[in-house]
Image 1: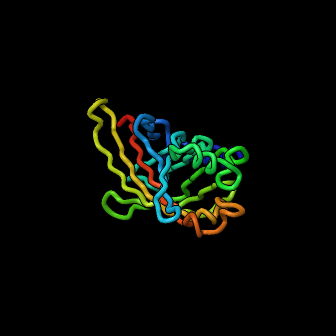
Image 2 (image 1 turned 60 degrees about the horizontal axis):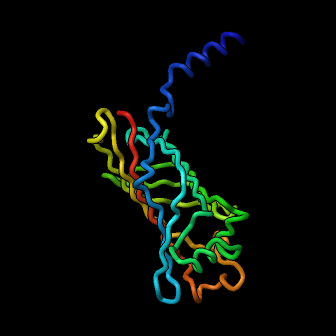
Image 3 (image 1 turned 180 degrees about the horizontal axis):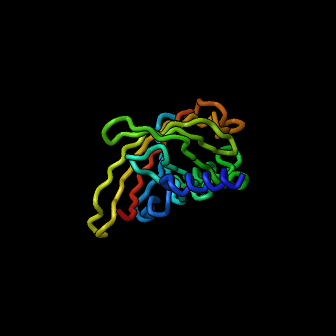
Length: 194
């Protein structure tokens, strides 16, 4: 029995770490954006989620060990219009008092060739979790402002159906005034040691 434990310990120490601290990217909080747009009675309404955090461990040469976990503070959502903001935060839409966080957790990341990737995972909004696919581009270069560091830029777009997540209750459950499709754009800059 002791021999089996020693063998297991030796194997665990010999295998490469899946994601050590040196592999995690630090998101530049001055630059990222998470925006959305939806059609309302023929016009485009746009807004943003200014407050969110993310754990991103991603090396294009080791996609099997990649991790993406994005947590979005729904309470901070804004369309830069007091009436629209109140509606978005209210119980018929995001219900931010009861559901203060949305979350995307990648279950796998695959290369689609060149700088194109796809994160397959689970998206949770209003405590409704569904499969979601986030296509994105990723560029990694030497960081000119930090010798010995890398800088990554990722841009992605996903089109969601708001009603799949219960966003639009009561009179807003119809798509007559507000379209069901919501486009969400993600733009991240991050850095890490080489």
